[in-house]
Image 1: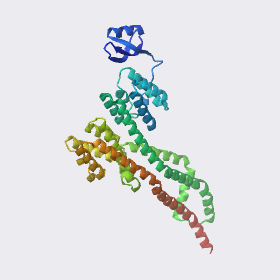
Image 2: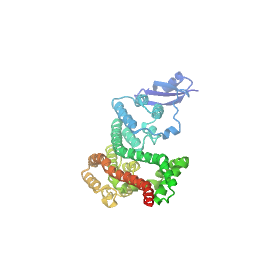
Image 3: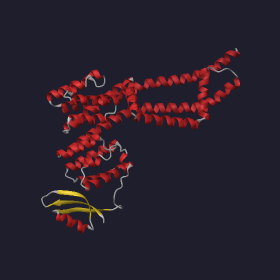
Length: 405
C-alpha cells in the first residue's frame, strides 16, 4: 500500500502531521476523521517523488554565505507567519548550491512528517553546526524561532566578514609567493640548463652553491612527474595531519606564536568567543551548555582547551571571570575584566556583545595593515633568493676570468 505525507487539523484546533500507510487518500481521510482530525494537505510519498538525500550528502559542505542567507530569509518568513514547511520549500527553490537544495528538500519532507526543525538540521552536522542546531532548538522551545534565526544570521554574517577580511589580506602575499615559485621553476627548468652547458664547456670546478642550484635543476627536469607526485603527496599529508589532534595543536601553536599571526589569531578567537557566548546567553541557553558549544566552535586548539578547562571550574561554582585570567596566557586581561563587570551587573550578554564589536574592529584594523607588514618580509625573501641565484651563477664566471688573467 502507498505511503502518504499529510497535515491535519483537529476539531479542537490542534494540528498534526506525519506519514501514514493507507489504501488511498479517502481511506486516509476516514482514518484521521475517526481520530478527530480533518486533512488540510496530503501527498503520496512514492519513490518517484521522494527526495533522495544520499548518505554522503549529509557530509557535504555549503558556502557560509548561503547558510547566512538561509537563516536570514527563514527568520523573515517565520516572523511573517509563513508555515515552516512552506518556507523550507521556497528556500530550497532559491538555493544556488545543488547539494544545499537537495538537503533543504529532504528537511522539508521530514518537516511534513511531523519532525522538529532542530532535529532535521542535526542530521547534517557539516552544514548546520552545534551552535546553529541549539539556537533553533531554543527558539522552538521558547516560541521565538524567528529571533533565534535572526541571531544566527547575524553570527554567520560576522563570521563571514572576519573570514573575508583575513582572506583579502592574505590574497596579495599568496599571489606573490605563487608567482615567485612559478618563476623559480621556469628559471630552473628552461633558463638554467642553457647556462650550465657553458660551465661544462669551461671545464672548471664549480662552487658548492652553483652545484646545489644545478642539482635542483636536474631533479626538476629529469624527475618532474616524481617531484609533482611528491608535492601533492606532501600537501595531502599536511592536510590529513591538520585534522589530527597533534596537527591541530601544532598549527594552533604556530599561529599563536608567529609574530605576524599572533595578534590576529588571538583577536579572531576572542571576537568569536564573545559574540557566540553572548548570543547563546541572550537566547536563554545555560552557561555550561553555552560554553560547551563555544568550545566546539572555536578554531584554535589552545582557546578550545582553555574553555573546556573553564567548564570544569564553572561547574564547581567558580565564576567564569575568575577562571579565564591573563595567567593562562591565552585570553587577554580585557576578557576577564569585562566578564567580571557583566557578572556583577547581571548583563554579561550585553557586555560581551560590545566586546565582540571591539575585537571585530581590531581584526579589521589588523587585516588592513597585514599586507604592509608581510610585504617587507616577502621582499627580503625574494631578494635573498634572487641574490643567491645570481651569486651562484656568476661566481664560476668570475673564477674563469681570474684564470684567464
